[in-house]
Structure formats: structure tokens, C-alpha cells
Image (cartoon, rainbow, N blue to C red):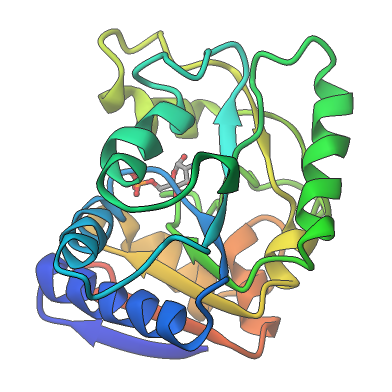
Length: 241
Ligand code: GLP
């Protein structure tokens, strides 16, 4: 894992944007894996700005959202599909048919997980996976547990994760209890991984990911077994590295 520590969230986001822009220049039909959450927000804004300035072209890019809450329709303001639409897709020249995300409203969620897994496989896997990290070291919605789950699956969200994400909802009890997430094998099969971490709330998680044991108790720790991970952190998140 390459670790690059940045002076600020802005600097980290600019470095991430340059990385993504260069990646797409090198491979215009890139398949991107996209995390939701607060951390990549500025990265997504910078990509929108760069697209408007003609510095990056998403017309051949395909994207896979990493995860989705079960029970929220795509037009629900807290669904990750909606989040990505408002914060990224509305600002870039991506084609609708190139946007993939798990359907949290599917009648048969097990079938939906299989469909998503097959869709990722059909494009040959992810070229560049953009990840955040949860305060409990989750990636996507791969929560701490006693084993790594390889493929897209249903997750019961931990109380810690529901609380951490409650800030996006109007009421603290509102975050759904269940989600769909891509699995650890799908993440690890990505050609490149960009891991972003900002703020003191991530210090412990980042220590677990970079210095702690490689264990499903800290899902991000498995990224150390990947040959092409770039971690961009700010000083607060990297304080214990
Ligand atoms: C959420 C998402 C993850 C995200 C993480 C960190 O639960 N499922 O994909 O990376 O938590 O979120 P944030 O960047 O808001 O701290």
C-alpha cells in the first residue's frame, strides 16, 4: 500500500481528482467503483468541474456504486444512487446506461445480489475502485465480522455504522438496518484502489487498516494484500500511522 499524507482535505481531494483524471485519460473506457459518503464529496465536485473544463471525458466510463440501502428507492434523497446522481452524475458527461448500482428495492434481494455480481464480472471487474473507510474500518458496507464475504451480498448494518451515517438523515433512527454491498473479492479484484480517509474520526480505523492485524474484524486491513492501493489521508486521519 502506498501512503500519501496530505496537509488538508482539499489537498487530498485534489490529489484524488488528479489520480482519477489521469486514470481515465490512460483508459477512457475505465470501469470505476464508487463509494458514497462524505469523504469523496469534494473529489466528486472537482471531477464535475474538470469535466466542464474539458479536462476529463466520462462518455465511455462505466461506474458501479459500491453499495445501497435496502428499502430506499433511487429517488430517495438518502439513497446512494440519488447521492451519486446529485453529487457526481449530474455534473459529468456519463451515459445513463453506463451507471450501475444495486437496487435496494428489488423484490428478490438475493437475486439482485447475483445480478450485480454478474454485471461486475461481465465488464471484467473494476479498473479503479474509489473507497472511503468507516470509523469501524468497513469498506463499502463490508462490516467487521468473523469472515470476509467475497461477493455482492446483503448486510445487516452495525449500530456503529447506522449512527455514523445518521448525520445524512433527518432523524437518528432513520438509517436502514440492511444494505447491499459489493464483496471483498470484488474489491480486491479491482486493478487499482484509491482509499480516502479524512479527519480524526478515521484515525483508529486507518491504524487498523495499515498497522493492525489483517483480519475481517477490520475489513479495510485486507487492502494490504492488494498490490496497487494508494491511500490518500490527511494529517488527522493519519495521526497514528
Ligand atoms: C459509508 C459507506 C462507505 C463509506 C463509509 C465512510 O457507510 N457505505 O462506502 O466509505 O461509510 O463514509 P464517510 O466518508 O461519510 O465517512
